[in-house]
Amino acid sequence: MSQKIFAGNWKLNKSPKEARAFVVDLIQKRKLSASLVIFPSAVCLEAIAENAKAAGLQFGLQNAYFEAKGAFTGENSATVSKDLGATYVLIGHSERRTLFKESDEVINKKVKSALVVGLIPMICIGETLAERESNRTIEVLEHQISEALKSVPTESNFVLAYEPVWAIGTGKVASLEQVTEAHHQIFKKLRALGYSEETSILYGGSVKPDNSKQLQEVPHVDGFLIGGASLEVDSFLAIAEG
Ligand code: PGA
Image 1 (cartoon, protein in one colour):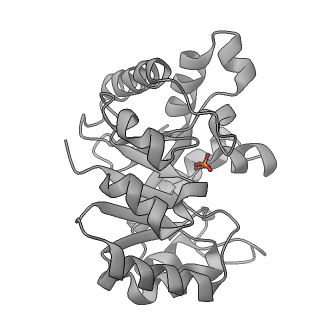
Image 2 (cartoon, rainbow, N blue to C red):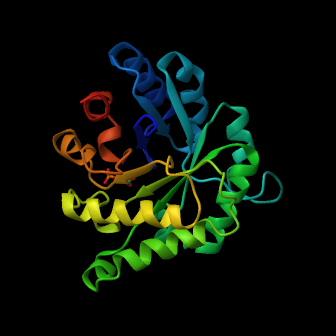
């Protein structure tokens, strides 16, 4: 398996000044060559890009439109982020799916356009509490995977992030059994669709320094997508460096 990935989703937090300070702090404090990725808000992308190399940091947009340019007021371009040095783009985060009504079809278009530009889509999937309580978790995850990857060539390079919606920003982390089952099923589904067994599958949802060690041991957990705990260098590194 490839190196574990530790990705920070900053959501709508931090100014460019704060983003710069984070990177400077990271350069001073990081010890290991863990694979670190930051998804800042779009206005902070350039601030991250400036010193990303020195920090050994990869980065990407939290959302990019499927058209590269044109009359799309308020959207962000994957192409422009690629020009700035971005490696990844986050696609289909549950906040995009629920608050901004992103459909499976739009998510699929975004995955395909990101791949054309040469970005690695980090595709988020996850069940709601109601879906889990009605025993539909695996069905929901498999459906989201199939829809997001419709007509996506099997040799494509992408990352999946399993984030139970009920665990995001709630402090409620999925149990080791729940993560084990979900990651096993996601791995199986990706193989059944013909994608590489090297495809990284991240867990996300209230990952913190005090639960990350155990979660990392779960088979097919290839890293984390971290919200709240990625906002401070110390907690981000405590998760990534153990
Ligand atoms: P959290 O967010 O770590 O704050 O739960 C995770 C995410 O939204 O990606």
